[in-house]
Amino acid sequence: MGKTTKSSALSARRAGRAVPFSLPKHIYLTDKQTLSQPPPPADGEPHLVLVFDKKTGGMVIKNSTSLVGVPVCEPLGLLKATKLSSAILRLMTLGPLLASLYSLHLSEPKGMQPIKVSMKPAARLFLSEKEKRQVERCFPGSTIVDTLVPKGKSILFYGWFAPNTDPERVGTPYLAPAFGNLGSLVGWKIRRVGITHTEKTTIGYVDTAAHNDEFAAWNDPDGIQRLADACSECDVDYAETLTMLENPEAYAADTKMFALQKLYSDAREDFSRPKDSIKPVVVSQLIDQTCPRSGSLRPTITDVDLIPYSWAVLPHRSKPIYVGLYFVFRPDALAEEVSEVLRVIDQRLQEMSLGILREGSDGTFWVLKNEELILRHRQACGLPPDFVFSDWVRS
Image (cartoon, rainbow, N blue to C red; front, side, top):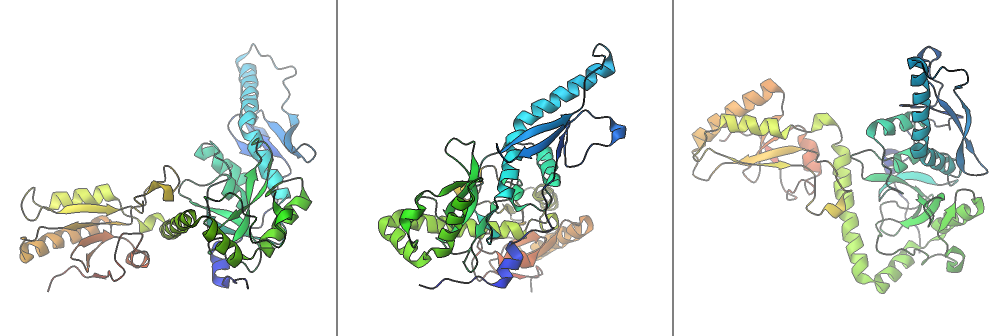
């Protein structure tokens, strides 16, 4: 069966690096910073100079600030020794990560295209946000850093796809960074779009016996090439059919989960700009203060945060993205009184630049920033397909 070709628009939107990338020759580690250039001499910061060793796959200390002749009994000398000791302790945490980044960059599958896909990262790396930013600055434009050290709100990570394959079709194979059974050896592994229940992905390849080992270490170029060839040769239609026959319940669950992940990941990606989100607490307080404390004009307020009911769709501790909130009055509220309250709310929203006021086609009143995006992602916002906005003024 033929392969599906993805559109050039999809490739332009979701693939490739933002800037040209080259591996740093050295990494400079101080007690608080990870740098790709030496610290300014004026700073006098004690530091380690690290290089990647291709033979062992680890980071090696090439040089370090000397402590010879440092009077450790004096405050400045003691401070220098303490800072260098702290840099060495940081190396214990960052060393394996840096080694993995170099290993994966040097073994990146040739001829395959990095495209964002909803999946779990290769490993959970417990770095502070400050450390993550430092590593990103050392490897600017790196798709591998984006995948191995994910940003807080991201649920999309890079997978490496063969040309002329469809990254949005369930079952399409791709290569992703992975760790060996012992967790110490980094390399590449075949995954399939949207498939989580089935670990084995050999079905559908031209020669299944040749692809039983789906992990290839970074220093095994022949193994990585075999996996890349397996992705290119996979008949997704055939593999999909066999998966459905072998475990229809798991396949149905994976397909449903993939659809939800794509639904929310696309919406959250589009709403990633702060200017498209509202401040729900401030807006709620404004509405509360404008409306009477009791009676028919006391509204019920609900925020829309792009968090699904099932937490399995998003990574643990994913932060809400508040795209808007809506409120409704009791049915016995008088139209004239509602209009006056809405007029005051609208005026105060504009004065404080908190959003715009709209009326939904279901009778709700909304405060939002980007009407177009909410309509584009109706389902992720919990809205029916025919939902539209109009001016809030009642006729």
